[in-house]
Length: 256
Image (cartoon, rainbow, N blue to C red; front, side, top):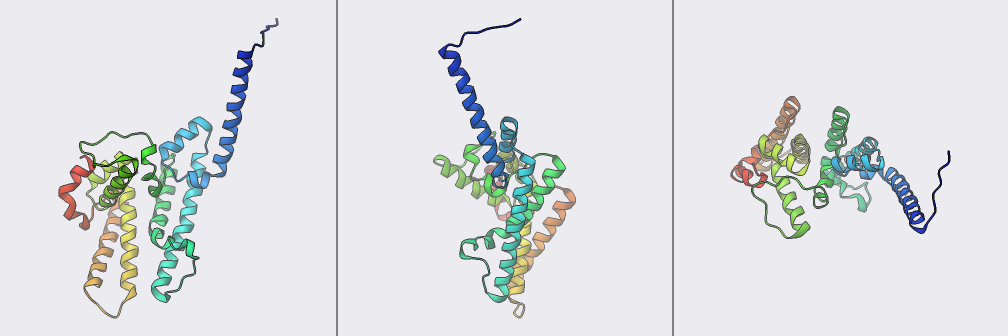
């Protein structure tokens, strides 16, 4: 049996709109696949949404972005060590920022690779999560919010609290991780890695004179090593000695 239908202007408009939407989705999938090394840095929940809607290769994107972080972080750390011994730059001027972010990018890349393989789900970069907070789904607010005006104020206050939470006790790191959709042990691993790298570089910079700064560097190095070890053993966040002055504020900042 045959079925027939009349082609009126409304039906033709609907078919044309469907074809245009399909074409746009195809173009979107193409450029998202090409930009996967960069899009893999966005929050994991956003990648999952793209994967469900447009077939975005989330796992591949995390792998590529983490490898990119590994290379960039490794180069930045090598340049940082070279500066301490020879004071010479081998990186071009436009890449000098890798010296600052290198100690963060390298451990973060390792953690992201481990998390993606262990849990089978994408995870974004900490450095990208903070700027994108105003554009991601809202989290359950804590009992107290920092006063701010607009998206910029929200980002700045959240970034400031996040830096402080790096050294907070475990329960505050876990609460803040749930708040901003970041895996809580990442706070400990990143801050401990920075402490270790910074302590080693500062100690090796001047080994001939022992002064108060050398003692501070030793404390920073020891704090980072202990936290990294405990974090690996407990598979959870670990507080720092440097968070003790802020204990009275952590409850209000993190909404515990």
